[in-house]
Image 1 (cartoon, rainbow, N blue to C red):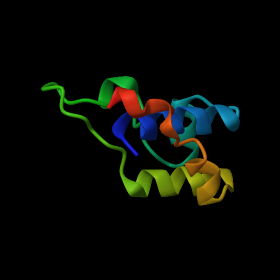
Image 2 (image 1 turned 135 degrees about the vertical axis):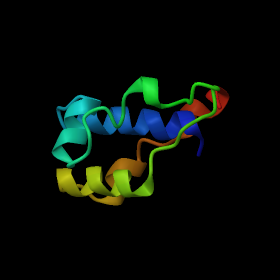
Image 3 (image 1 turned 90 degrees about the horizontal axis):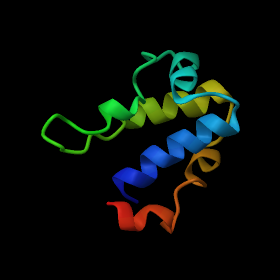
Image 4 (image 1 turned 90 degrees about the vertical axis):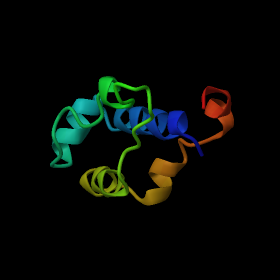
Length: 81
């Protein structure tokens, strides 16, 4: 599992629930900019990872199970580490 795969899983999870990443964040009680693409890397190009707390909140807010989120993590993004 890598940085790209986690962020892609958030995007796909939001889409599956008919939401944008911003809408998913809001529904989860997070700041609407939590999952913005601009926040995925620091100004020094260091990857920023979403917290496990944020992932838990989006799963809970949608009534999903953890496997419903983690199914979106696969080998597709391996080359984009």
